[in-house]
Length: 147
Image (cartoon, rainbow, N blue to C red; front, side, top):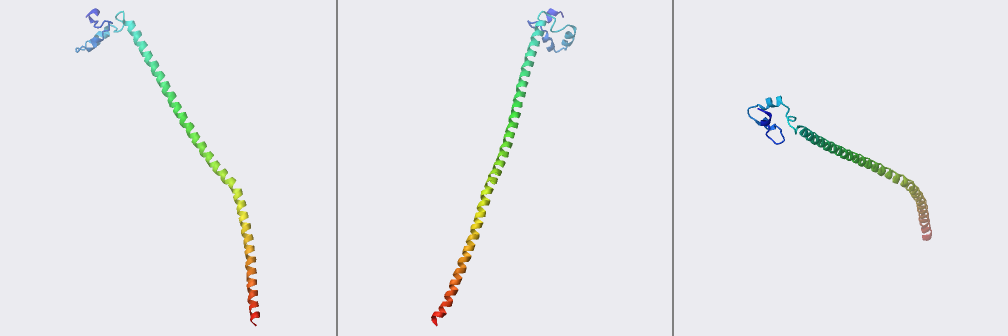
């Protein structure tokens, strides 16, 4: 058919030919360019290109944002892990400091306790010895009183 009869849409696109059941659309498209066979052809190409570029730009921005978000999440996880490790180290060092700082006074207190125990044992030994002597002395005096 002629080109004017094949125009089924106002913009001149012959895309409707593809829907024919006889399969003649492939032969028609092979003979003449679909987009450029009318005055609106370059407008269609320009519009299609502009839409494709806009979608591509939007996808690039979306991928960029998603990449930045993923990077931010990864950095936050690394920071949290480093913070937990640092806190664990501080906790261990704090415990070691507490133990180390308590060791000196504790050892001093144990030495004083040992000295007090030794002094008490010496005093107790002296007291027991004096008690025994006085008891023995009384026992020796009692027979002298009876006689």
